[in-house]
Image (cartoon, rainbow, N blue to C red; front, top):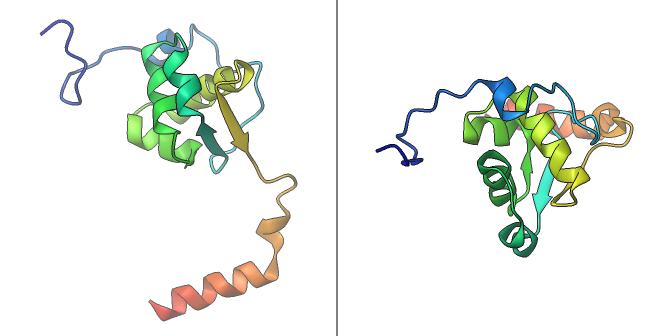
Length: 119
């Protein structure tokens, strides 16, 4: 059916068409692990494109940029642009590591190693 947008519907839309040809947004530079969350009431009241609405609705539960890309089958670069747009529009909020210090935390690495050994 022409108007069918269900999961089984085939979409042939190029990524540059979704972003209007842009490879970046005025929003923050987003890492793959950046956590995105939205207020469902704000999303429901907003006029958004299909892709932006899908991202915002998905993010009523906290989700990383990489997870959004996987769930919606949209390339990560496109998700970064769209989430950046949503941040600028104040439709979503993003939480990123401020300086990557948690990646250098030895205790975190030790716990990770213990978890791997337990498997």
